[in-house]
Each structure stands twice: as C-alpha cells, then as structure tokens.
Length: 375
Image (tube, rainbow, N blue to C red):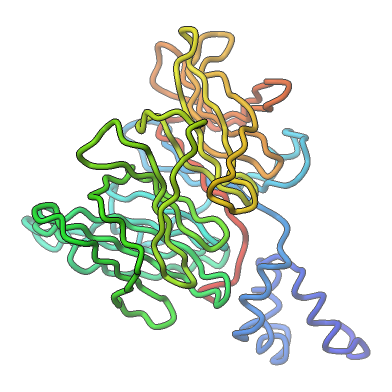
C-alpha cells in the first residue's frame, strides 16, 4: 500500500478485510503487524465483518471420523451461490485428543467452545473445554475443575460460553448444583485473559432445583440462555435461565403462555441477532415446528414468525438445525425408513426445500463469523 496514503486510512481499509489476507499482511511490514496484533484492532475488527459462515459437523457413517465443513453464508437467497462457498475444516489436535466424546457448547464472535474429556487412567476421566478459532487455526485448552467422573455423581453441572461484548474477552461459565442437598448453585467463570477460574456472586440465583436441556445453549446480545424446568414438577412452566456475560448476573425468563409447554420439544437457536425458540408439536396428527423470536432482547416480547412442517411431501421427517442469515431455516431431513440424513434449506414462505449437498448423520450447525481473537 502506497506510503502516500495516510496510515489512518490504511487502518480503515485493513479493518474491513477478512481474516485470511490479514494473516498474510502481518508479514508485509512492522507497522501492519503491530496494527493487526494490537489489543485495539483485534476486538474492533469483528464489528466490520458482515460475512457469516455456517460450521457444519456430521458423519458419513457410524464408524468414520466426523467431518467439518465451513459454508460461507450471506444475504443472498441464491442457494446455488451459497453452496459454492464450501470448504473442509481440520479440527485442532486438542479436540482430536478428546476422541469421540465431545460436544459443541456454542459459538460466539467467531470462537467455538467444545466440551469433552480426556482419560487420565482407566478409572478417572478429566473434563476439558477447548476454545477454538477455525479462521486462524488456533485453539486453547481449558481444564474444568471439579468435573471428574466421581464429582458428577453428586453434582449436576451445566456449561455456557460467550464473548463479553464490552471487553471481547471469551468466558466459560460453569453452574454446579448439589443433587443431594439442593443447596444454592455455585457459579464459576473462566476468563481467557486471566486464565483462571473464579466464583461469580449473583443475587438472582434461582431458588428451584432446575434440570437443564442437554446442549441447549444460545448466546445472543452478550447473554447466555439455557432451557430449564423444575426438576420435580414436569408440568411446571418452562423457562430460560440467563447469564449476562458483562454483569455476570443470573436471571430467569418465563416463556409466554402462547408458547405451549412440553419441555422435550423445545429448542433454542440464534436467528440473525435474536433468540429463537422452536416448539415442536403434533397438530391434526401432523408434526409441526413453530418458530418464535424474542423481540429487541425483551424477555416478555416473543413473536411467532412462521411454522415448519415436520414432514416433507415424500414422507421424510424434518428436524430444525438452525437458521441462515437470510432467515431461512436449516433442517435435517431423514428418509423413512433410513439411517442417513440430509441437510437442507427451508424457505418459510414458499415452503421450498433445497438440498445443501451434505449427507450423513448427527448433523449439527453453528453460525460462525471470522475473527482474529486468540491471535
């Protein structure tokens, strides 16, 4: 870049570039490397990124390795264009060390948090989390204290992950509940910048003993949400437990009466920049999914957007897996009978279903934005 261009203008241009060229440009000159590596540039860079990706995880068959594919998502409704930007992703060695026993906690600001365990010996397995940035191929291992096998007999633990909006600091939150005495919850937070666990003191710890939905976490607007219900009252109102990543306060969000109960059929997703609650039910002997969205981050304001049919015209079963940036639903389609499934896009108004060319099993989708965090 010409020396005649003021450095402030160079910085503005560089800020709008995607991650891949920025990694190369760090070798151009000392000034650019210093800029790109700076503590101010890295958190601000993500605010300029308008391109979203979908990180898709699936298997071709039961006994093969899992495959990761990154699909560039954008505002276009052209599904063919959407499919042209698909690349394979290699998972880091820290995740490989977990073997087959890991799950995705969530993604936030271009980082993914994976949870699993590594075997110390034949009797004890140690739980770990890995914070991973696929864009720069870097991962950080986090040991989860008090989560060995024998601890989980006495305690129930739920994890959450997100990047604090103000500081751009990744955080893992761990909520631990004593199963025997049902004493108030113990909340611990791991902040990547400090690399230590510490207790978080919230004035809004729920008084009830709640059971959390497995893998049901979404982070939206700097707040982590989990699905939960009363452990001892299956007919109780379903609610969301929230954790503000900035104030580190817990909260409760009661789902409105318009969203019918039946806890097991509720799912959480992120739709654009809003929290989406998907409710599955059987109506007139047909499976349907109603999509509700929290409006403007106000817990009491939920709006129903559309309904997804639970079966395709040929009789295949449909399972919601997420949403594109356009608002289209991503669905997993399973032929009946059959084992393998297909990832497809569902246009909510025309009800058109488009095969995305990913066939396998155990399909999961994480929205993903490129970032330099962890550089």
